[in-house]
Image 1 (cartoon, rainbow, N blue to C red):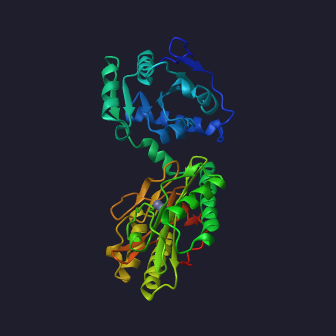
Image 2: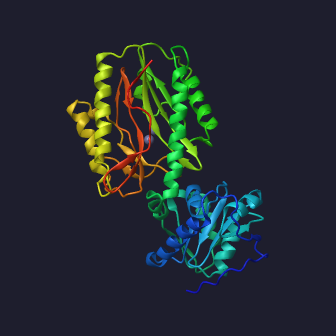
Image 3: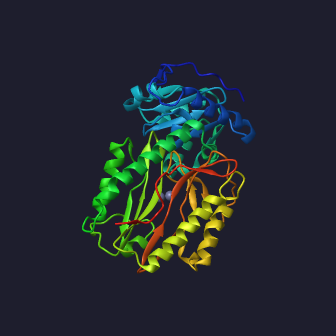
Length: 384
Ligand code: ZN
Ligand code: ZN
């Protein structure tokens, strides 16, 4: 297979010269990532990789717009986007940019023909059936799409120092927003009031937005692990779960803390202690080389001692970075091992119908001998 270097060619949309004045990350990091992917193509019997998933586009090209495709070739990468993003792409992207006048696929297919690319890897879990069929039907005769998902996600699991710095800043913003908001919590405010205040504070502190819909759930509703805040008013004698995260400089943070309005009952105290011990045991089990399932078991075993393991109905944690949930997953049946530089959450919880739920969650970075807990917020039950 021969791949012709693409010269900027005005017949295919408008090619912009690479420039990177506004990207916060050095262009070289994006270049390195694309080179690493390009170097892996031959071993996977691919001539090119087509990237369509937003977080992967951001990771490989620094592009933050909503409509783009990246064709990654051994010697060159081309980002296709539309005229709305012409200025933005010139500022953010260090590879060749083609501004499409019509659908991006038309310019993509033209480039595939020009480069005589045959086997093009694509992200099967991240492209719609319709987009896949439309693209496949337009490909040159000898070109074909080959499922090649997950490789960029695997690269993204281990964070670079600059990514860890961003996650750290996102975590600090998130924790500060929580600390600024807690003194205003009292019986009578609604779950929605509290969620809105947390999100307002995190934006004022530098977040672009929450990294997911803030969870505030009081009383028996705290037993719903992914409850949405409602107009229900907080009352004395209620547990309140607050699960929140910031998205800052593109990177997510994730933290869960518990409040209690009034004087906690013995059952609340005992259940809280069990979850806290489980969370600490999970954190203790984190180190480079540890099996993700082992970390999950460490937390789960503590809850078993308290006869609460059946109320722990999700995995112990997940990776986070450009996405709030990304590999690895730390569940019972997960097969992976942790590596230094992974950013993960440790978040055991128990959920008891007609009682409530308790979850404690930190964001940590895996190191050779353990982990660095990024979340600075106290893990004590906040009694209000
Ligand atoms: Zn969370
Ligand atoms: Zn989480």
